[in-house]
Length: 473
Image 1 (cartoon, rainbow, N blue to C red):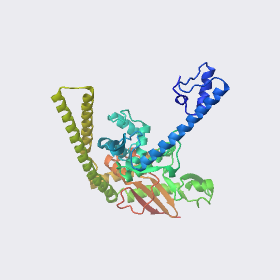
Image 2 (cartoon, helix red, strand yellow; image 1 turned 90 degrees about the vertical axis):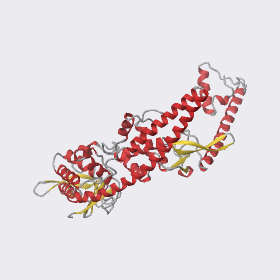
Image 3 (cartoon, rainbow, N blue to C red; image 1 turned 135 degrees about the vertical axis):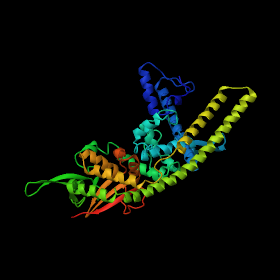
Image 4 (cartoon, one colour; image 1 turned 60 degrees about the vertical axis):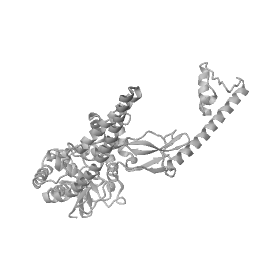
């Protein structure tokens, strides 16, 4: 029994489908306000009712969607679940409805920033972390999601890809029923105060696909070829192993452009270089041009400057958190004064006192983390750089191939083979982390984005370094 047929279904097809299934099981649908007979005329009337209900539902949906789109264009929040790091604030009231906007929650915003820095730099005791490792680390250190649950891979990945953290919001992106993407021209874009630096966010977007096991196969890490997964042709395709036999029957191994091998000369002229030649070029170039103390100091100077600038940003966040703590303590004091003066303690006051104390505890924890000594912001001594360079040079030149490959992948993003030139590109942040952790832990420092556009300036660029070598034709 329903009040009206629309309370059962407001879709004529679904209404008839489930009505017939119920009818086969001896169950009838009765409307309190829409009485119909059991004859064919009654069935026709019932179907007319359901068609009108469906039409009215679609009309209501159209008007609601129009109002929500206009609300989003005006910069108001439409009420979907709030992302970690944000909260809502009422800024206006239209009739009986509150108009809200997204604002930053200072405590949760620090957690969001920490997740991004964990992905890029680690926690100071390890190299950059993956999505699953971050989720495990957060749960072990007592952090929780917006709803108080444990972090999972999906939750961390959603945070790392949410463009709201760089101030970009999008409404009307998907259909609410089918979850299919709508055309881009129907999206409504808005702005909020950013939480994460845009450069760091875009770095993470490029790094995420390259760290997936679906992209980097296990054989790339453990195979017997030194530059597997690192060597690439200047056309963008990977270099693969090819063999050839000399006049005296000796077998030679080459790194060859895979695009040319698969698609012919129309895809790429087919750059090729002997495997032992390229391997020795890369090892010698790293030893001569990167792992020398003076060169390491030059490359890392930009990273140290960037970390100093981030230290200034941290000071600003500390001041904002201290203000938040002061306000929370003031609210808690007023609640306690109210209890003492009235001698009335109900459940609501108890919950509000607990809420304020929890807020103060979270702020204290974030302040303790931000105010803790941050190693690695100062420069590296000449002795440290010399010891690091010497030991890493020995490890990339000697030992089993998987062992040497681990060190190379920690230092390099890619080895690009061009006509007469070989380019070695690496990430300066990862290099700085490797120097700080020491050569013994360099293999734990995971490689960065292999799709960075090559630059010509090894000196002074904050994101990555490059070495160019001339090679014999």
